[in-house]
Image 1 (cartoon, rainbow, N blue to C red):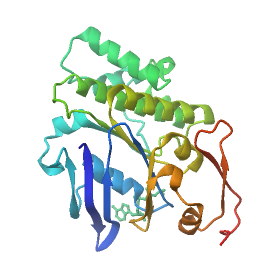
Image 2 (image 1 turned 90 degrees about the horizontal axis):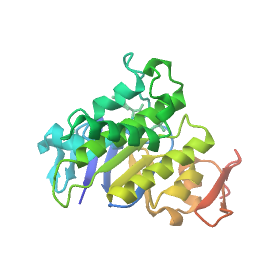
Image 3 (image 1 turned 90 degrees about the vertical axis):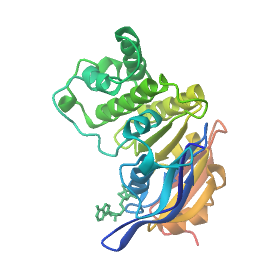
Image 4 (image 1 turned 180 degrees about the vertical axis):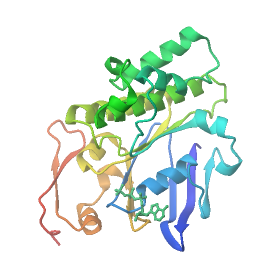
Length: 269
Ligand SMILES: Nc1ncnc2c1ncn2[C@@H]1O[C@H](COP(=O)(O)OP(=O)(O)OP(=O)(O)O)[C@@H](O)[C@H]1O
């Protein structure tokens, strides 16, 4: 059953930032969370991760209210890569990833393997001796992704039973990445889902990336669900209405997903 948000709301000073949104994450499926700036996407991800507590509705893990899930268990079952990975202290990249596997129930050699595999999957192996504060924005995003993979790999070594699959929550993970690394990261997230049977929710502004890698979409506007369903069925007029700009959708040259272009013109209708 994984993570489920049922009619979840989060208000600050009486203003709802997320308003009655329902999300069911499904094993093996990647959900794109889309919407304009300020739509509530990061807030929703923070609610799903347990970083923020809903002021209405509930978030559940395997049917259990997240408030009742001990933090150690939660850390095994979901990892959040935030929008602005902090530069942190003057740790090396390798040390930072090591912290994510500290609680793994295994020996030092196995831990080293987890660290190496996670760095490799995020194309961050070459950065392992670099200091966190010296990383570029994109390098920092790749390392934050490696840490999340390492955290979940370590968590999977605990035996939580057949329902123990995990969820990867990614907040604009490609925002600072060059085009090749954008594809690399999302492909790596899909590889992780296929390998582990886990689920993934990713906040994206790039509709082409969403169409290529995501199975489902949740479009938010003003904290509310504007549309949800299979990514391939997302209607262009709905996108244009929500973003108040024109979108052109073209078939992808290799038939996978679609290519979206914006022209800066007002919506077609
Ligand atoms: N603690 C807070 N107190 C007051 N307002 C907040 C707080 N946190 C977020 N907001 C506001 O809530 C709204 C939703 O914020 P959120 O970060 O979830 O948006 P978003 O959809 O992720 O936007 P973006 O695409 O710009 O990252 C914004 O208007 C933001 O300014």
